[in-house]
Image (cartoon, rainbow, N blue to C red; front, side, top):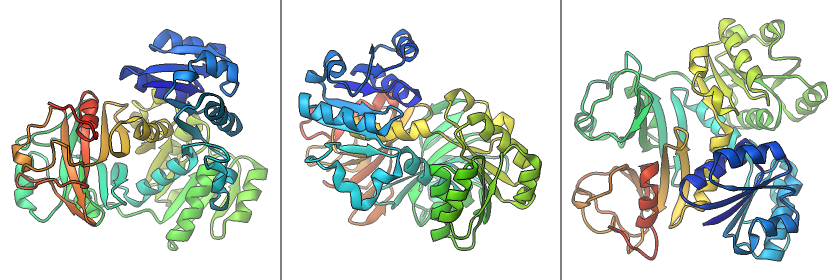
Length: 458
């Protein structure tokens, strides 16, 4: 696939890195000479210095032969113009744009992005995507990652196995025998920094991070069986009243009437603006690093500190400070991937990576075949994929025990006619079933091939 990426920042770099590693023909455009030099030096891509919305730059980057344009610059208007130029002058088939301003995304304006107006095929709103991820993490405090598939009926959670975890040192096959009515399947395990797909004879040990597929109705029970019965936070302090912080607070106000929220916002004008928009949330003006202000926000009595400012260092320090002052736990937004590995050492309980959220949304449209959703995990080491089974798929027909599936993938759940089915040896996949698969990076291409209309597999 030939792809042009407009924007070489953290998101653009991450997308280019992922697509180039899979053998795609990638070109990146950015106005920053330094960013382009860095991307040329470290990735197998072509880099161009210039404006991604300018026709001559797109032409130089190969727009005439491009299959896809991904516009992720910092400016919505540049992203939208790049898509328009790619469509009108070069007839690029698929155009993806990151749109951050909520004004463009209001439902009564969505006709703006029709083919007749601004021809953008896929709109990615980082604020909304990250906001929803934060809300899922707040709702399920025992999980370190939460993703929903198949009309929200299937939930994939990442669960840390602590010392008192009841299911450690038990073969996975025996867990199925002990809880036959539990539709949960362990599909991936991270142990001492290494990710692998477990077999039925494997056991979980203390310190493991387990990826578990289950149903919406049984996710809390599943967390409980892994020793995580933390109650959902009802007293929350949010650092940062930007688009994400406002979205989270507004949504909690509408969904959870018992939850009390306080927001700390450094900009006085922004604090006044969001205070006018929110009904039950207390907005405090000042720095989230001000200990007196944190005490004024009753941080010592809070269940959760959610740090959502645009500054990673502020997010880390305010989260750590909040716990030292008595807050039970924290959830921290971290843009810089360099911070992810040692955040836990500093006292960060859970983190959200906006870059991985955006990359996952892009991959959903890069993947070939009947792919409905993609979520990248462990810095791209694996993907959780929801795909629709076709008549031609090798999955369709035989019982699962008779399938010779490639190494590096495991079925987590099947969605059929509104019901979630747990994979078992007797189960037969039917056409139009939606299958959630945990696939190592090396097996992703095979998963794609399994769900393509024209099949050349095995």
